[in-house]
Image (cartoon, rainbow, N blue to C red; front, side, top):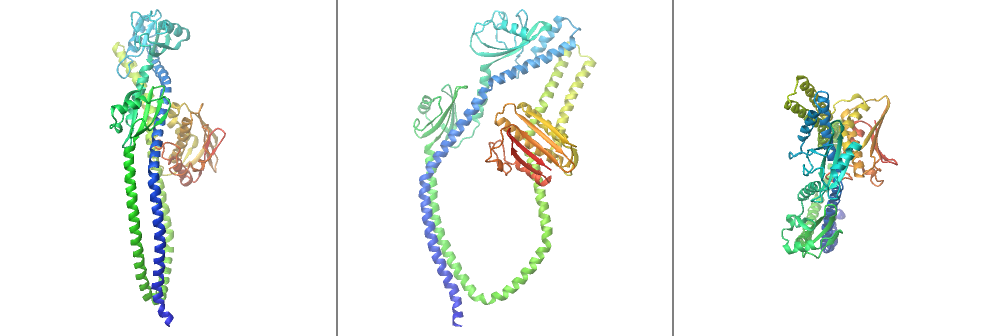
Length: 616
């Protein structure tokens, strides 16, 4: 009996003593660790922040430098492409005039109409850019040629070449020729594309000065750099041939002498500078094609102030942690004392309450078992609805890409309608606009409008969520996906091939199946473009039986790195820049195939590239 009377006291004293000891040892250990961490963090914070700033400076300058070089290397290709577009447009107009007036008008009248029509072909600023020369070397339309019309045949360029005679000879000999010349006054290079119109004894073409294209490129790149947001205290600067072109607002505290010192220490080799300007560090790279020096730097004094504030914050955290440990320890001791007193009074009631509690829990468990099946069903249904919403949201997130595809699909029909209007205007101007001719042109315009309307219907049907499965030809669904991506693939010069095996019929959710295919085609296209593959190609194979459907989407992009191939279906995992990819495309595709279509989506590498396999 005497021992039983000691139990309530022991219940109070023993836990209290244990808690006091534990609080003392844990508090001492924790405070020691926090103090060491504070000292280490104080020493490392400045180094880490400085290293991060340097890494950011190098990253920005190198990425922008790579972009500058890439855009510069494409100037010649862009010039050639624009020249061909101009001359092809002129050729189509000439062919239309020839078809309309051949054997109806005299040679001189048709020739005059051709020149009048080509003179109306202008750029965005209303300047003509098609020139015409007869076989005698006389200029009938100057267009983009900045030369004296009276002395055209005698014109000699900076390399002492009779460029006009070369144009006539090469065009008449080969039918079409691309030439390079330099202006005799400015020594500027220009590219010239000429074409022979033998039926009317004419040579026509267009020219572009390389300096004009280079200036357009510089202007666009400068605007892009100006739009880049930088941290407070950071700055971006561009020097054109070591002359100040642009300095961001982050360098507003720099003096003229400091900027001059920066200019004097610009070199073609990429390098880090930490002593040229007091209080600043910066990294420079050089673009040889643009003759630009790119600088990204930061103010080390403002960085030091930030680190000082961090250290103050850490000291404050240390004091707060010490106070917290004391308060928590005191609260725990008080709590244990109160709890022990309560337990000593109620310990005799525990067994009776235990029996009642067990009975109550048994009844609750029985009720829970009865309602569990319905609750599980409700949760599964809610999960499916959430998945469907996520799929639809993911599809809507692709709308930007789809709008770009619509723009590609519409560009050619809009150009064709423009030609129709030009022909009607020309016919009206020469009083030859007949009812039959007008009906024919209206019919051509309507055909293009119907094509544009059909394009919109295709994209509209793609964004309509599926409610029921439908039986369809798998090859037709694949063809529609290819059609939606065709212009984008053509722009990147990617060949796509479709192979079909089996009876081709399958029952599934069409739009969800197409969403997965579009994701896989787009991923393959991005891999081919990013890896700069020669002769890029995508192959889509489908094999359909009564029991199953198998679709393979393969490319020759070199495959997926073995270290990350197991993660490609993880949510938010992406090898792309954050501005170009969210990491949800393949995750959503796998969820659609595995959960909604009852199949399996997998990936493996071949000797040519990656293959994504759909099994349903």
